[in-house]
Image 1: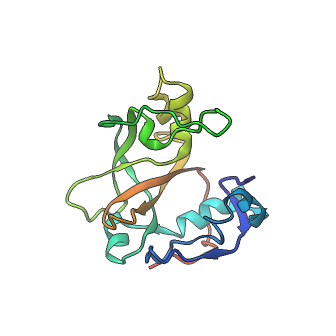
Image 2 (image 1 turned 120 degrees about the horizontal axis):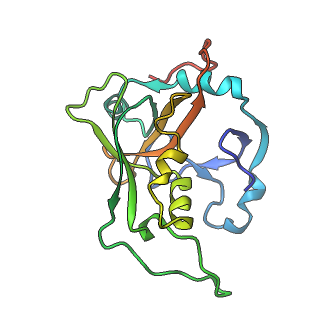
Length: 203
């Protein structure tokens, strides 16, 4: 699919009857029409540089705990980083799956020996100790796949400690573990004045 991070899209969606989380949807026909799903995604625009920070800043929650207590599955956090590290994945799957033509399929996150994790505090953290969460953003894993001798470079690539960027985490919980959150995406936005948000914060 020709999607980019800030694409604005129009897409038909449906509920997953096995997933009761309010923000969880899937593309219509996600199982039965897998080979043609890209035809259902229509790109109608792209969020401009000037609007990105305004929108994200207007959606920030004060703490992961707030999102959990509201029984939401998604949220945006402005973190204060305590530590970025790669943890060893116990019993990781080293097998390689092949297509019918014998070509290797892309690795899943379970097939990497290390897992990128970040320990951080929220802007108004209510937790007794820092949050320690796995990063799921695919770019991290692609770097580790292509550069197995230099996996720690992922942190610099993500501009985690850049003084020129505002840093936010898009976080989400897991279907089978509603109280466990992961970092879906690391949002790096160039510093600029924040104007009236284009959308109201979710409460």
